[in-house]
Amino acid sequence: NAGVMQNPRHLVRRRGQEARLRCSPMKGHSHVYWYRQLPEEGLKFMVYLQKENIIDESGMPKERFSAEFPKEGPSILRIQQVVRGDSAAYFCASSLQTSGGWNEQFFGPGTRLTVL
Amino acid sequence: GQQVMQIPQYQHVQEGEDFTTYCNSSTTLSNIQWYKQRPGGHPVFLIQLVKSGEVKKQKRLTFQFGEAKKNSSLHITATQTTDVGTYFCAGPNTDKLIFGTGTRLQVFP
Image: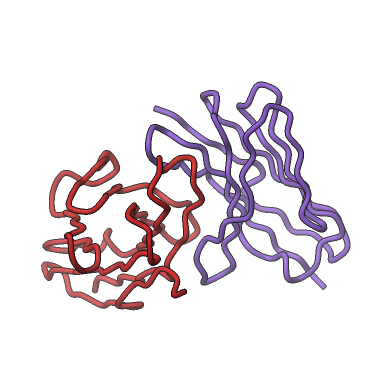
């Protein structure tokens, strides 16, 4: 049973470009969470999605960031017009089909985004 | 908003010494989870505590949930170099988890 998959593992973008980060949850999991981790810091919640629905995006910056989890295919975190401050590790996690706070989350390997 | 703090931020120990990290929430928690992140890796679930005053053990790791369900601790007995990493607690907030600030453990052989 494959775990949570993320790609790319490393992504380099120049300022102003777009970054697309993909996450495929574990088989049978329909809850997906995105986190941002700056170097030497903790995990900051960004967004929580179920299939075709954004449940909680309270941690997502209002501009340039968007997320989706379509009926078919992976969840996508999209960052438009990247700036140097967007450089971070972005982790995706998934959990079983129940209330998120009561189930363990399985994390992907992360995407390390570097903005030049 | 809800905050989850951990102390200490860093801990350096000699191999064989014990280690404890403490987790404090600004609100009462229905449950608490602990995760470990190795350097360069991703967080991995360790355990979940649900009951007030609950204590669970995993080999050399002992997890405790406070009576008031606002704090928790992780104690490692006789640390080994394989224990190196950052330990995070996490508490639920509606449908998501709020992660603590983490404690980074370094073990010197």
